[in-house]
Length: 318
Ligand SMILES: [Zn+2]
Image (cartoon, rainbow, N blue to C red):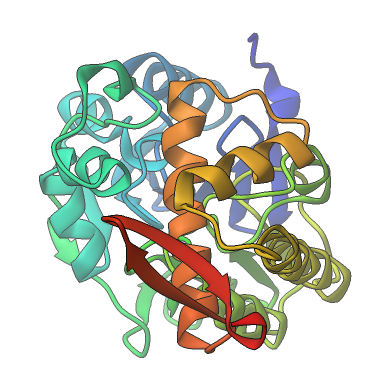
């Protein structure tokens, strides 16, 4: 992938983003002798991290990177932290829960596997290098960056759990009041969701709540980590909610007769035309178990163990 200056897109006076596989938010504050820079997320690994630093250097030659702000601890969001930290000595900010996971990234693979994971899924997409958060940020405590006597820019963390434990979005309010909302993986861009109808999630109920929550937040620009930004959030959040509800409906349809989790997974994949490799088997499998929990807590499905096999059934059919 060659990155040109076109990938560096201005949103408001001090806020930009780098359009790449994981979109990277950029805040730049001129300080006279240099420019303070804050970035949102850091990509997958050293190679992407290097590209991010290169793009920053090309567009802001006197950049002094102050902090990486991570939306969550998935490898494609914090995998570049160690390299960028090593090169710049910047701070690393994130929420408390995500900070713990960034410190111990093997929890991520253990979590999706449901035990110590086989080495085959220890890829750069699922296992980041560890990094240490230097500052914990949370909703209700805004970070204020003073620009001069009169002007300031606010970084407002917004709690958006569901896709992951303690994920945060960042609402950036520029000096003129214009807002950009970096939403992490709480929502996917239109082109992304159309291609991958079933998006990874850890908690289905909270994912739905976060989608409703972010649709209520007023902003001029809404930037999902994957896909294109939108200026009006309603349609995109609706599309994401429909994808969740359709997957619920699909699982209920598959459960016209009782089935094991793996039998449901096979049918979910077959009906979506997905050929599972090991990473997808694990990711979609983990996501499916989270859907099953959501449906169970809503009392739409139940489980029973017979002959030492756990099968799920639809409650109204039992
Ligand atoms: Zn993620």
